[in-house]
Amino acid sequence: MDSVRDEEHAPPSVKLGAELMRRKFYQLSPEEDITLSRSLVRVSSYYVDDMRRRPPFSEARYGAARKVYVVCGQDQAIVEAYQRRMIADCPVEEVREIAGADHMAMFSAPAALAGHLADVANTYA
Image (cartoon, rainbow, N blue to C red; front, side):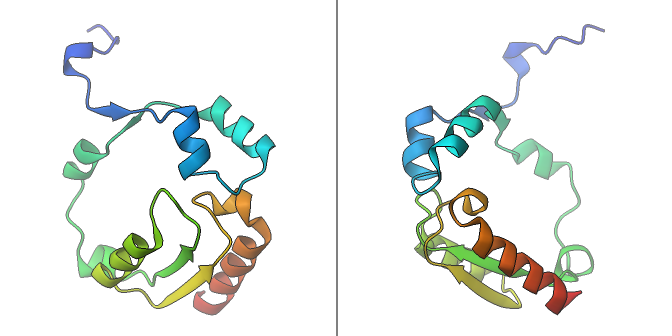
């Protein structure tokens, strides 16, 4: 069997352009992180087929995990109103906020994100 993927049967995919990523994902991030991200960008699936192959979410599997959501106040890819909607649709133990973080909080607000992650690990371990 040929290991080359038949393009006709390839799953839907997406690759975001450099300017969109700069404006919507990394608008507060340092320039060197934007440059690094461009070198690492790969085509990605929409995950629809991946999710169809997995068992459905259940209380025993997904509901058993305690969840904390960190709202990124300056996220232009998933705006705050939509982040809040996701939280309402899937309740979490706690909501934390980083007002000055873009979508890539690990670049735009690394110290704040690390502080939240450490505190969450210590609180919910």
